[in-house]
Image (cartoon, rainbow, N blue to C red; front, side):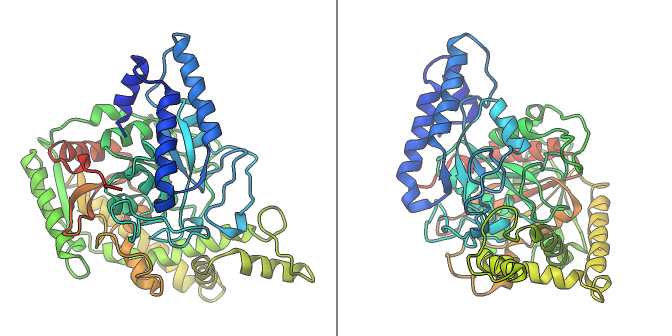
Length: 482
């Protein structure tokens, strides 16, 4: 699949119509889905209707924006009016939202063509897309392996050229981790930069919607469209959105890059370490001044996250009770048994596990010991980052400790699964922007990701570092042979 700019040129020069581009994407989906399972719903009819509107504008001599006519996948935890939004859960199997999320509204207004809703771990809880109630998505580089999670469907769809770009959500690494495992670019923006209105909540103080692309440029174009203040989201930031394309310069002269010391060592695959170290050397060659930076509380991110996120989830998921919408058990004698049976039958094992952890952490007698303590540690993690950004412009580290693992390999051991998000979680706790991009392959041809972290609202610096690195390598030009 060509880049956004290339497809835009084809459209305005009439080399191809938006309908032809959409049909090609739908044909790819049709061919690959039996193996890949990236999509929970394919919205062919709507996609072709959206493409025809773009063609009609072009025929009338109207100008179109960069995203007009571009096939895009949407993670199935963002509300799409009149189209099922399941969150990968049985409890929302037949839920058709009566309203549109802000991001999908913005994309529709820009003329983007939604080809389908992508698979995810149930309610975005997971690191492998194996927790979906409907299907397990394969990794396009090796379908027996996981694509990462929870936005595994969105990452796999872009890697396999089923769509040009896609949207995911990131609570503890759910955009960056699958981007690393699928060999694409994934960006988690600053908390509050992109509206969460219409995103089904997992952990409200951590969730953030962000873009996937094959290249840094495509990712920046999609971010440009979805970023901005939204009065319907009380956590939305009222800030001016810069022109991100101006940050795409292949030069890092005068830029300071910090390598997070604590992300190297025990648990990190040697092949991942080697690739990331080489990438750091490349950043230095591009003119960046590289130094080691210590974030001593970085390693407390994981235990802190697994108190805060489940606590927020236990409150957010209380609304799924079989009364208002979604699944309702047929096996109930009274109201209480309807609640309990609905939730027991409707939620999967991982979601139940997190609800129970969260309910326990918030319960009387434990609130201070767990939840309050975790919030204090969160502040300390944030302070480490603040200190680091007085010395450097961006921080770098591996995105994931390993490359993609086999499906089923970690399902029986939730703790080893949680460790997949070791490097990404602290970024969410501090509300910072973070991006993963390809920086190599292991001996089995599986992609390795480099994570670049910026200060609050410094997506421009993150994109500049990522773009400069990408343009000086050819990792982004390599595609899986499906």
